Amino acid sequence: MKKFASVAAYLRAVPPAPRAALQQLRKTIKAAAPKATEGISYGIPMFKHHGMLVGYAAFKDHCSLFMSTHLTGALKTAVAPYVASKGTIRFTADKPLPATLVRKLVKARIAQNERKR
Image 1 (cartoon, rainbow, N blue to C red):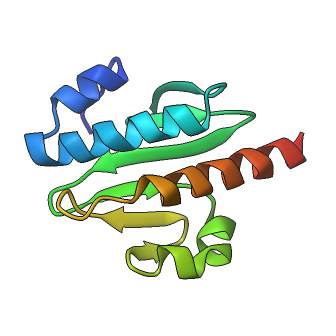
Image 2 (cartoon, rainbow, N blue to C red; image 1 turned 90 degrees about the vertical axis):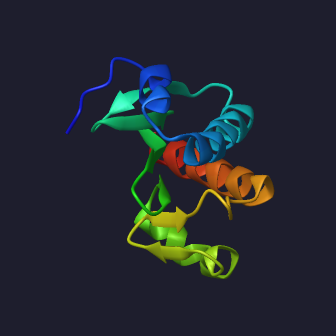
């Protein structure tokens, strides 16, 4: 696994189409979680707020948003158009996650993490 010093370095290594999808995802997450910190964890971009909030990554044939297993089950209907399993939602550059869904997921993760405090 290649190591990245920053989120910017990670994104520079991603091909243009998925990079654009991940940059939009990143922007939406930042807006939904302004108090979250951003960095690289487990080799991928990760947002943290009282623990892991969400992470994202690009792969050969898809992109993924990583989060709580509990949430993907609780929001099963909302994530149904996407391949979702065990805390991961897969999407493609040509069918990115809608900003409204991302905001909903991030806000739910924030609430989940704050309840654990």
